[in-house]
Length: 149
Length: 149
DNA sequence: CCGTAAGTCCACTTGCCTAGTAGATTTATG
DNA sequence: CATAAATCTACTAGGCAAGTGGACTTACGG
Image 1 (spheres, rainbow over the protein chains, first blue to last red):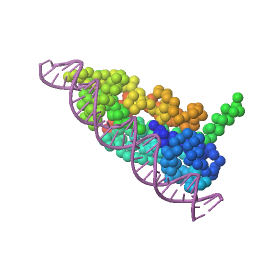
Image 2 (cartoon, each protein chain N blue to C red):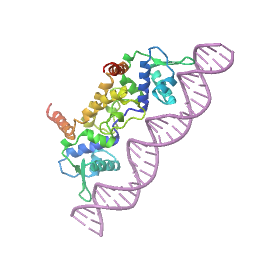
Image 3 (cartoon, each protein chain N blue to C red):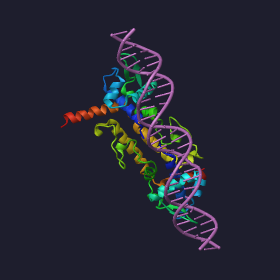
Image 4 (cartoon, rainbow over the protein chains, first blue to last red):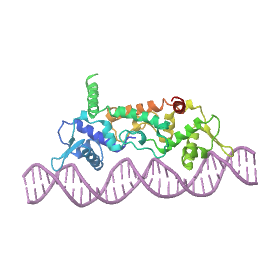
């Protein structure tokens, strides 16, 4: 499951990616346009800033902007930050491996092997998509909608 | 995330699939061999029985057995029963679609499109694997371990 | 250098979900 | 009829998701 936190985080990033780069945007702005609870968004943006996906400026004229070009922000990385590991069980996680407490022999575990495949399938989608891909996908669609009739 | 419930359920099914077919097995037996909390397992088995994956007999000599040959029990179906829809967001679920409350235009939603891919990737793994596949995978491994040295 | 607009930090809440447990009841067998 | 088994009902503890409230800090503009 994708939590609201991750969903809101992605929406905020997309909103920023759609702005002219290097423009700083108010949290309140993002919240209003994307219809997100402002205070909750505070937290999420802060977390993404601490992970260096965003930069912020305090005080009057402050706000948030992407710290990197959208091509360099992977969706997998964002989801991992906000929701934790992609793997359905910790014992197949590549970024946050932890043995599961109830398993005796890890490589005899048939469930583990299957869940490893699931992990890889998920990671394959999310780690090969960047913010730029998503941002672009909107423009393509707009183009189709507006001109391709 | 795969819950303990689903994990225990799959372990129990695998245990049953590994038995000679049509043998009824005690809950207590499964719990002991797979090291699962018996009372919790009660619940899970009952749920799978109500969904017709299992049959049960009460009273002395009673117990549980698979209701279908393992080839006909899909892992996806089991996980959906015990953990709910595979989709990371309800608005891309094929078996339990529900619009998400915060989205305005569904087919303009870029997150939705991406999550659709994730859903498909997960379903592709779990819906093409049956209990028989997992059961077999153990035997292949045993064979390798025991004879292929 | 002060007012004010912004982000930042800390503490708390509310409600639901997970992972159970306890105990009574029903059903079947020998 | 005793006993072994599943089944049903009810309850609980703890944790996490999704927030909210309020105080603090930083910086710009005048």
